[in-house]
Image (tube, rainbow, N blue to C red; front, side, top):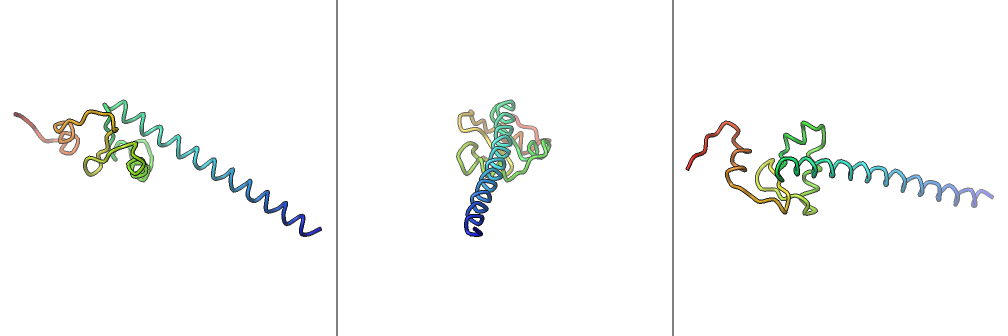
Length: 102
């Protein structure tokens, strides 16, 4: 009898583990989708300070860059792969008080 209970307990433990893992992945997915939406609203560019403002982890940016959903162009600046890269926009994001002219 204890052996059957042990098997049942293992099955329950596995199901509980899978449920917790599923919930964590769905929370992660919601956070990644939020960052992608934030980038789309900002012409395909998202910065680490924007992510901080949304109280999200910067590690999500690193995850999105490693999966190819974002491209890291400079320190703290990420762009969507289909976004047009503009050097002046990137410089403006990097140097907020800078003045650029031709």
